[in-house]
Amino acid sequence: MKALLLRGPNTAFEIARLPDPVPGPGEAVARVLACGAGLTIQHVKAGRAPAKFPLVIGHEITGEIVALGAGAEGVRVGDPVTAFFYLFCGHCRWCLSSLEPLCENTGGYVGRDCDGGYAEYIRLPARLFIRLPEGLDWKTHPAEIGVVTDALATPYKVLSRARVKAGETVAVFGAGGGLGIHQLMMAKWAGARVIAVDTRREKFDACRKAGADAAVDASQGGVAEALLDLTRGQGVDVAVDYVSSTATLEAAAKALGRRGRLVTLGGAGQTFSLSARELLTREQEVLGSRYVTRREVIEALALVARREVWPMVSDIRPLEQAEALHQRLERGEVIGRAALMIA
Ligand SMILES: [Zn+2]
Image (cartoon, rainbow, N blue to C red; front, top):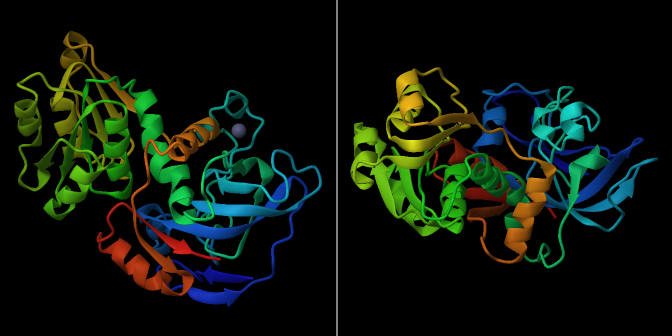
């Protein structure tokens, strides 16, 4: 099969011929139509996230099951599918409680710890494949459907993690990024008033298109004050931090109102300080949110099938242009998500 191979961290893609994958027991192989491209996988390519090289990256796929190994369950040959991002075990107490991202025997990530979707075929444990619901036009829109499994499902999950209700105010830190843009979209879908926070003004038009009612330029500081101004001093009901640096977390905490919820899921993952008295007197909560459950991927796909939301994929290219596309990702130029067409 044709595949985009990375021989090591921070190297260029090599268009390679690899053996077609054969499914082992419990595994399935899918033909890949399209695969999403975002900063998560660019971090792997650039060597900022650990991975097992030589490697085929990518996990946001639209594909079609072509072969099943012995005992493989849950999908059939011919099924249109996407893939779950984490290599969960399927039998620990967290997996059995349908909380796959908390799996205690996790094998890592698709496209980092095993080969991913930048190839004509992908082989995974069958339980990682998720059959696409009826009514999803995956043949016409494989790039958009592919990114749902992460770029749209992750923000969708945050809505329930933070218990976002219609009429609440939601501030999104890192709103111009691939996940941030989709968080604006999902918060708007949930009926919230949505405020984008980002340091890159050039992303604000896209933020408004995705559903932001207001935007705060974080490059000059004063973010908490701006959020308090925009809420007449009440503070926001929910702050979602896709950056999670000390500065963004502290600004988010300071901008929270009574019963406010701060959700952190940004890659920086830094420490920050918080007033226990504020938490107590205002009954505030701090929450972590890690990827999604299989169930949440299915729910997000259903929303897209009903056209209640639609992923923002702004740059779709053939496999041969992967290097140029990843250079755009590295420079932060892509609006929303990008994707590669594989088949
Ligand atoms: Zn498990």
